[in-house]
Image 1 (cartoon, rainbow, N blue to C red):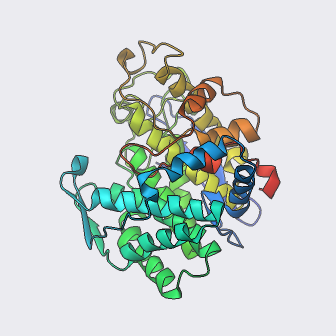
Image 2: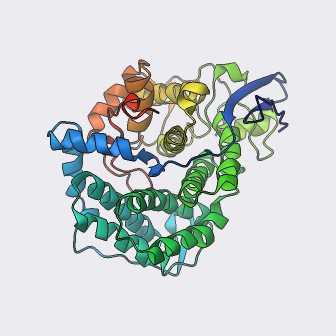
Amino acid sequence: MRFQVLMLGLGASFAFKSVHAASNSNETPYLPIPTKAPKTWVHPGVFVSGPQLDYIAKRIKARENPWTEALDSMLNMSYMSPTRTAEPYETVQCGPTSTPNIGCYQEREDSMAAYTNALAWWITKDKHYAEKSIHYMDAWSSTIHAHNNSNAPLQTAWSAANWVRAGEIMRSSYKHWSKKGIKMFSDMLRHAYLPMIEDGAPKKNGNWELVMIESTIGAAVFLEDAALYEKALGLFSARVPAYIYLTSDGEYPVQGRGGINTTAEIIKYWYNQKTFPISGITQETCRDFAHTSFGISSISHIAETMRIQGMDVWRSTDVGTRVKAALELHTALDSKQKPVPKWLCNGTIPDTMNPMLEPAYNALAFNLGHKMPFTKKVLLSQRPAGISEPPLFIGVETLSNAQTPFKRWGY
């Protein structure tokens, strides 16, 4: 893949250009995004913001839906039990399909519990939730040293995505999280998580690298690490157009960073999808819709974090166009609102999408006014959206993202 840098202003932005497959050599600019870290970091600023959570809390205080139902649903989950305790491991070992599974479920579930309890604390102001969230973070940050085995990068990224959201909320809102605890948590991110994820995974399926980027950007916000943030933005700008296809890309999808360059290599990487007549097909569509939804979810999560930190890629880049096309295509087929065409995945689609529609729908339809009828129908049928099964990094997004107006907090 060859890149050209387009300098804008004082070099605050760049655009990647990609050379397409051999049969389509036209260069097409895509995804111009700012590459500088914010001059002033916003906290909490990973996926959700303080004003956003305040808005949700006000709606719940007035017993309005869908937020009240979503909160009630979350509070009834096992993650919220006052008797539930952390199960930290020094080394988490996760192989293919979690075989072996040494601490894998425990880490993912405890990190999700830290996040859901942090949300409950901000919304209800019940300090028991705050203490529970900190319990999970302190237990793991004082114990874990490493991840290993073949699924280690993916496991690390899934868990880190939850940890950084919880850490951002708690550090910003609860004065009783000790300085020692915050330092242990920061060190945990630096030493037990980032080495495994910060360089991405260009030759893996897109959902792998996208959640690795998501977690790295979140950690960069928590640590206020500008270099790490900018490094992750570079990976993001290369991966998104190599994951979601637009017809404007050319006859075939754009190349990624992994040396997948020829037409034959691209077709194989895209699970033998040979034709691309419409926008919205993803690199994993013909694998299954479950993994596809993981990839789109991470793109949406990253876009939300970037927006909170002052870079609205929903509006200023083709991220929104790509995500909208992908969601409308996949929800229409997944819900059987449209038949699967014979040219797509040989007319067969496996698995179903996870409950991950709220963030993108809120940004694109509720705030920017795009019509997304297929996505809307599936989204309403999923409310209140729960936690993906098995629990990974997608959780309670009706509560956190449904019908939250950007204009109320100025970004």
